[in-house]
Amino acid sequence: MAGVTRQRFWLTLILGGLTVVGLPILGTWCRRHRLPRCDLDGAPIEPIYAVQIVDAGGVKHEFCCILCAEFWLKQQTAASREVRVTDEVSGQPITADDAYFVRSATFTNQATGNRVHTFQERRDAEQHAHDHFGHLLEGPERPFSTDLPAEPLPSARRALRSMRM
Image (cartoon, rainbow, N blue to C red; front, side, top):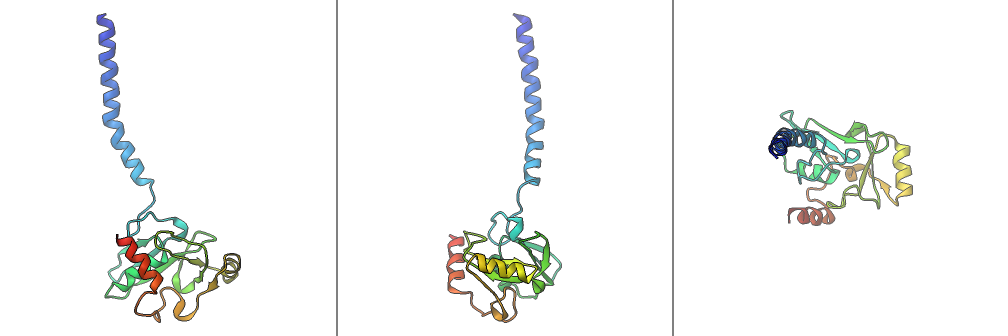
């Protein structure tokens, strides 16, 4: 009977030790392997729709969609150094100035209501517009354009208001 008690003692000690050491390691691993979070609303960032902005101070900010990035930009007093969006075909970041944008019937982010998609190649943008009932955005319609209206579109205001609740 003493041998069984001694075995249980050592088994409990070993399992307890593994738990004490293993849980912090597991927690660290999970934190490193989860999706990054949007700097505006804290939503997980799907890599294919990611937007990165380098602010005037050189700090990088990441966003889950174009709508969040534009809203954040409107709140800044200094001009940003760089805006990078993700090409939906290759998954590679490109500068917003070099991107083609399409507003289509397909959401990139259901929570914000964003329907703007990003492409490096014009033919990919046109194909997406055709397949998803959309159109290319040009001139002041283009995201991150300096010619954007001062007020967000009504649908954008509703989406952003619902995010705050």
